[in-house]
Amino acid sequence: MDITFLGQAGLFIETKYGSILCDPWFNPAYFASWFPFPSNEFVDRAKIAKPDYLYLSHLHHDHYDPDFLQQHVHKDATVLLPAFPIDKLERELRELGFHRFIKTKNCETVDVNGLSVTIMALTAPTDGPIGDSSLVVSDGEVTILNQNDSRPVDMDLLESFGPFDVHFLQFSGAIWYPMVYRMPETAKEVLAKKKRENQMARALRYVKEIGATFVVPSAGPPCFLDDDLFHFNDVHRDDTNIFPDQTVFLEYLNENGVHTGRLMIPDSVMSLTTGVCEVKHPLPEEEVQRIFTQKEDYLRRYQERQRPVIEAQKASWTRNKVDIVAALQSWFHPLLALADLTSAGVNGLVLLDCGSPKVVIDFHQRKVYEWNGEDTDYRFFVDRALVETCIEKHHEDWVNELFLSCRFAAERKGGFNEHIYNFFKCLSPERIEYLEGYLAERADVNELFECAGHMVQRRCPHLKADLTRFGHVEDGILTCRMHGWQWELDGGRCLTSADRPIYSKPIETREAKA
Image (cartoon, rainbow, N blue to C red; front, side, top):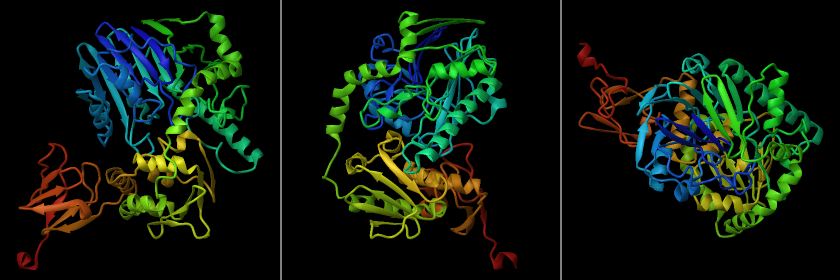
């Protein structure tokens, strides 16, 4: 088995049973703030243009690059789909022209022409934009785990697919915390140091639990080439920077007794046989090392090559064309009406300060309105062009567009509140209903409601939509109007799927009791 590293989480896996293209990312992401590090500008794109299979771990734009997929990847590739609760990834890929799909089941191994493939799908709202996943591939001789930046919790189950010859995993930061927060610099440095330590320690725990023969740090860090963001790069091995590079983590592994780490840069090729791993770099070893030992010089040259790209993207942002308050009222009010548990979790006022206007998202009253000077609990300070662009393009996941860009500042009272960011990930009825159902399940809410003479579970077994809002009964058939799933009220049999019955019991009347 040969594996070409493409940068970030990108892999091109070549086996005797076919090839798999994983998470190719080449274009800048998140409002031109993230770029692959090291640069993958010079990877041979023709080599990876006609894979037999395509695997995308999730929809974050450092994994899902629609422009690259549309322009450079043959549409006859068969997509290996994770079992996500919402089919957004499939819909996106069909719009790009892909038409062959293998819909996997979570943690169930599928044979694809001799190649064994297993995908572990994570489906919590905090896992990417409603989903993240890991990929296990075996050709009968070699087994690899491409964990990318997912965080599986059932380690016994994951380990059962091994033993693994090589393990690719994230080790570096992929978030905006704490850099964008307005707080005393010393406090920010303390938090950043702890974040850096925790993320490498978490990766080390995965490495030791999995016990693969070889380990490759991947899925980060990005680099920041815009002048406004360049200071986020860890150019001096600063222990308060959350973006340590691959060589830092490899040294950390060595310090902790793991000596099987291997460095790969874009276009490096790993040749794997049982117990043997050979890595061939596209550059002489001394030039590879200079990428990391002379990082600032490397990044400055990279920056100059990409400056026209950054400026072109900035020029494309929407500015002074959108009535932000009216647009957010029209968009968010229906979502807030659905967001019972999310609103209770936020339990406060969020200020979106775009200079002009300043907008309040009030999770008490479930309203959006222009700020009148009232005290707010959470505050985001953002260039209005970024908000206008999110509105104009109707981005349903602002975490995967705005917040990961790090192009904002934030303040808050008290600790981190994941309900705020979950709300911003779920800006469609489909997503917010899934989020609400997920929260209801975790809270062990098992509500029933009266429906056409039956007591029926309130949450749809498909994606947890609230059937008091989306349920419709006709001729004894309950239909969830969110996605069209149907059940017989008498008995609860699902007419859409063989394994999704609903709880439905007739209400006993006084006459029947008599």
